[in-house]
Amino acid sequence: MSTQETPVVSNFIRHIINKDLAENKHGGKVATRFPPEPNGYLHIGHAKSICLNFGLANEYQGSCNLRFDDTNPEKESLEFMESIERDVTWLGFEWSQLFHASDYFEQLYQYAIDLIKAGKAYVDSLSPEEIRAYRGTLTEPGKPSPDRERSIDENLRLFEGMRNGEFADGQYVLRAKIDMASSNINMRDPTIYRIRRVHHNRTGSDWCLYPMYDYTHCISDALEGITHSICTLEFEDHRPLYDWVLEQLDVPCHPQQIEFARLQLEYTIVSKRKLNQLVTEKYVNGWDDPRMPTIAGLRRAGYTPAAIREFCERIGVTKKDSWIEMGVLENCIRDDLNQTSARVMAVLQPLRVVIENYPEAHTELLEVSNHPQNPAMGSRKITFSKIVLIEQDDFAEVPPAGYKRLSPGQEVRLRGGYVIRCNEVVKDADGNVIELRCSYDPDTLGKNPEGRKVKGVIHWVSEAHSVAAEIRLYDRLFCRPHPDAEPNFLDALNPNSLQVLSHSRVEASLLGTVPGSRFQFERMGYFCTDLDSSANRLVFNRTVTLRDTWGS
Image (cartoon, rainbow, N blue to C red; front, side, top):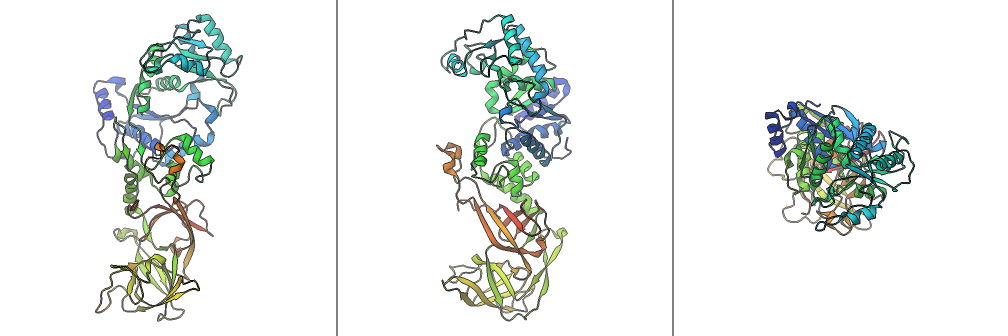
């Protein structure tokens, strides 16, 4: 387990565990697990579950297993398994043991035989559509399948034939024999095994008979000695089935299922099916696209493990579903990067400035702080020269009232450098401003000019001593807070979620930065060196703006 220390905030799950420990329930142990299905990349909702399960195990000096629920091989892959392991590790956690549901296929099969022998399960020949029709509704009880009273011997023979591949896919299923009149539809003889001739990543073609999640999960928990099986609220109605299966079988222990509210984050979706659609239909550039709510996407965008853990701590653990504002997550990464990221200067959309009274071919090195609030991060030297580049937005030919940047006849300070005055505006044939002719006051390095006050400060880079870079300005993928509420969630896609700037310039100090390096581009936001970056081509992703400007 990780030895990280995180602040302890009381919640109802901790209250349950504390009570169990006080009563010596589960032998005074705390054992949790994180059991993802490897059918996609983990997303921010999984991060909440990871932090909860591993965090509780850390707090109580217990254990937390990572277990892959690999019972649906049609949609699962080794790629997804590897990505899940990578994400859990990146978030800062270590599993006690690594398991797969497929580790238990033989034991699960034998337990199913025990259910048949006890008259608690039967082989059914109804089709999926017929099973649904027989199940009834929330207001009407179901009716028994014609096969419900099949003899134990016949059930055992058919179930063995299902394992041996004697029947076609879908020809038979194994159902638990519980109560077709139960008020809980999950207890109306649920399917616990189905025939699927699909190659499995770990067991190959050894099995053509696969257990269902509700049957597999509780037994896997019991076999691993899990004490507290923590899951999201949609499984609350499944808890009676979880308990029923364990009560019928001779398993090592009976874990306690506890449900909590899943994460509902505005401006995102977390349905794996819909996330997969975004990837396969190329609305995004893969599972790790920085606009995706996947952990891989957040990592590539420049989010830190600490920020995500802090987010999960801030939103807390409750029994009631609620929506979390995207700003909460964005503020967590702002708070983290504000403390930890070095400041550098980058000009995203350059405008050329010629300082006419600066000596030709002369340069000087100006020392600037890497972090004004953290002297321990040191300083660096940047080159000042006759021609510098500033942001196009930092010049206005006709400035609005209160404008504090550069305009004709006005002065502004270059960050860490001199005060300059705009004397002339150069335009192209179409009337676009392409260059400013300015002068500088050589007595203003590190001090204010005599007899006048300069209010504005803008960032800059030397034209000759800066480096070309591609800047990817990422924004929220959806422009509406609840895209899942739309008739078609794709209609809520933000058409401006990505803007690529190909002619940006950055300080030469950024040469050689490795992917994942994080910086504050002064006045522009927090940025991260992208995986596509190389020695010959710098690429940066915007993680988040300096302040929340969404919708403003």
